[in-house]
Length: 325
Ligand code: COA
Image (cartoon, rainbow, N blue to C red; front, top):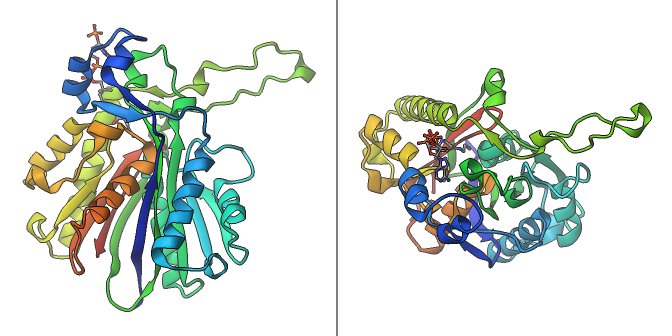
């Protein structure tokens, strides 16, 4: 059976590093609190570049690394909750900048599970024979929708983008996925609300506080551990695998304590979970592809290795994907 194989990975992020101590200068927090509660030490924050800058950079690197001509790209999917525009999509902006004139391009909104949704959507197009290849990217500038006076959220997030070029393959590739949505819980994690005040109705308040990230941290923590544990269990069982058969788990980089709970509950060695949240914070849809690219660039993945990507986030959504490298 044809599979969808990751041929190249790439990442791009701001140069500006903001440490926990930097944040302690603007809100009542400390390096100790942030490190202990989240595992995050620093994050990259845009100095003014919008999301498209990082996403386009990733797309260019992918073409280069995969040695593919832009005209040969069939599909571009970008996952983001912080696109530059309502329309055009980031994917269409990528299409223009790289000259992928024969591709179709669209964005997906699934917050921190976005890359999982985008990757498995590309997989469906490729497995069905509709398209042969795709560029799949997760990218965010969360700094533009974070309330920098709210210490309970502003310390958690960072900016950046990561992605993969994937194509049809006879051997390795995506093996199984478990994707889910729980819209009934959407209110525990929101951002980017635009209200419907308008000049015609003579309403004066055009900015809504719900524009900024709102999160019920404890509920999100419970949701994340529950869904990731369940989906990982189901995924491994369905393939007759155990944690020992997996070289790396690449979880969404939200909080080290969430990963500790997952590792403990599933009795998987903590060292098998690849993490870089201490350097990037939570970059939402970009977190898994940035981490995956690090694994790849460090040469830690070999052909035939099994890895599992596991995302969870706003919506609420989750997605767990088993890949044979
Ligand atoms: N610095 C110092 N103190 C802070 C703080 C900060 N940055 N943020 C919150 N606090 C305080 C709170 O005000 C509270 O004080 P109080 O007890 O006097 O009221 C105390 O710390 C505990 O807050 P709480 O929210 O209960 O902490 P927590 O242990 O639940 O940790 C999170 C908060 C956000 C780190 C944690 O809930 C979490 O990681 N949740 C999941 C978030 C997530 O994964 N989001 C991404 C999903 S994609």
